Amino acid sequence: MQTASTNIGERMSRSQELSDHKHGPVIGGHLGNKSIRDISWLLNIPRSTVSGIITKWKQLENNRNSATKW
Image (cartoon, rainbow, N blue to C red; front, side, top):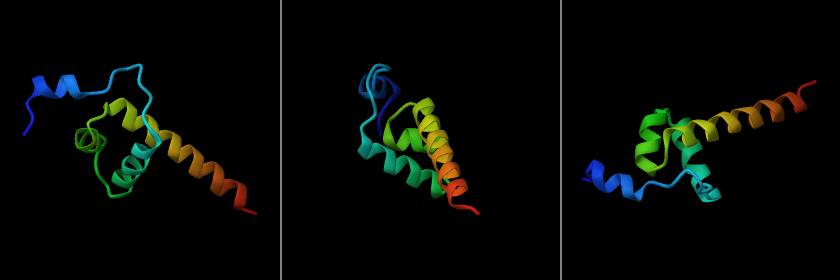
């Protein structure tokens, strides 16, 4: 188990961009009813990043679904 002191050094800095291969696990966790906090902890990324990914994904899904409705 990691302690808070070692976890801080391993977290991504604010200037880094999250790679595309991390988006899938975030959405998968969301669809699996995991909380933002749990997803953040499991993937070791900031909660704000997790929240932003989920928000953007929901917007894209809503736009995709509304475009196909008659």
